[in-house]
View 1 (tube, rainbow, N blue to C red):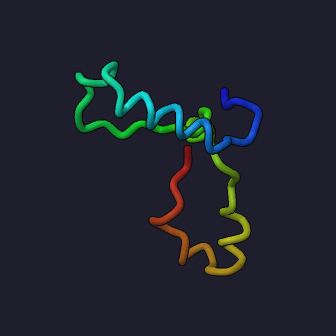
View 2 (cartoon, rainbow, N blue to C red):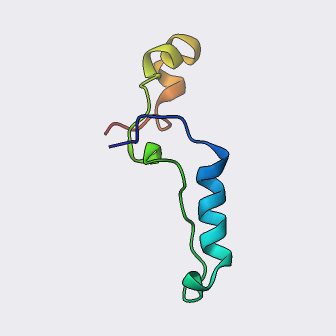
Length: 66
């Protein structure tokens, strides 16, 4: 569940401090999301709008269900 607030520069700074500190010496080659969990939720479904613009045939193979 995403955190229900807008991220602040201090949120990014906290991760940067951690990564340059001695606590992170064993971390290599990682992508770390600092987004309050927002990348975990599903975005809005724009398929009906895109279908109106591009047509159903234009969306086939582009829009995936699920």
